Amino acid sequence: MGKLNAPIDQLPRRVLTVFFLIDTSGSMQGGKISSLNVAIRDTLPMLESLSSENTDTEIKIAALQFASGCDWMYPRPMPVEDFEWNDLEASGLTSLGAAYQELNKKMSQTTGFMQEANASCAPVMILFSDGVPTDDAKHGLEHLKTNNWYKAAIKIAVAIGDDANKDVLKEFVNNNSEAVLTVHNVEDLKKMIYIVSVTASQVASKGVSVGVEAPESRQDEVMLDIKKAIKKDSSLKGVDVGADCEENKGTDDWTNW
Image 1 (cartoon, rainbow, N blue to C red):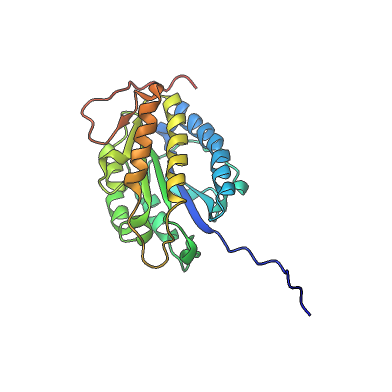
Image 2: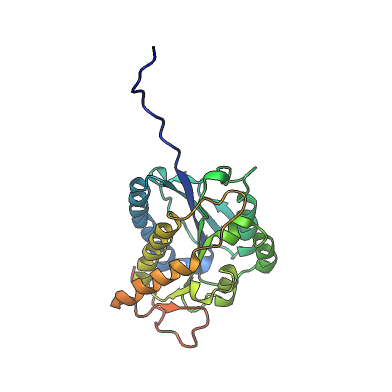
C-alpha cells in the first residue's frame, strides 16, 4: 500500500524575465559604464530577494549589450540567484537597430527565450543609452513592435545624459513619454537603475500569465510608482521624467565615479 501522506509536488512558478538592454558604445566610457556596472551588480541581490520571497513567480535575467553589433551576456535568461554580472566595457558604434532585431528573434516561444510561454509573466525591458543610433533603429523597432511579448512588456528607457536621443527612446517605450527618464550624473544613474529595476519587477511579478494572448502592459502602474519614488527622494530632483521635458533639471557631470 502506498503512503497516505506522500508529499504533493509543488506547482511550478511562473517566470518573469527582466531584460537589460545596454548601450556600450564608445561614448559610454568612463563614469557612465563604470557606474552602470556597479549599479546593476548591486541591484541583483534585491531582485534575488524578490524572486525567493515570491512563491508564484521566479525572476530571470537577460542582458544584451550593443555597440558595433550586439551580444548577450549569457546564451539564455538565468535565474537571478545564478546570474553573475560580468563588467561591460565601452567602445565602438551604437547598433540599436541590431539590438532590436536580436531581441525580437529571442522573444520566441519556439526557438528563443520564451519557451515557458504558458507560465510566463509579461517581461520587463529596460533600455539604457547615452547617444544616437548609428544603424537603422526604426527598421529594427518596426519588426520588434509586431512581437506580442514586446507589446505586453513593461518598457522603461533611461537616457544617460543630455546627448541621448530622447525621441528614439520614446519610440522604444511605445510613445509613452513619461517612461523615458534622464539622468545627469553617476549617483542618479545608480539610484535610478535600482528604482526602475526593482519597481518594475515588483509590479510585473504580480501580473497574470501571458500564454498565447498577451495582456495589456502594466507600464502605467510602474511609472506611477517610479514617479512617487523620485518625488520622495530629494536627491533625485535632477532626474528628468518624460521625453518631452523642455528644460533639463540636472546638469551633466560624469567625472565623479
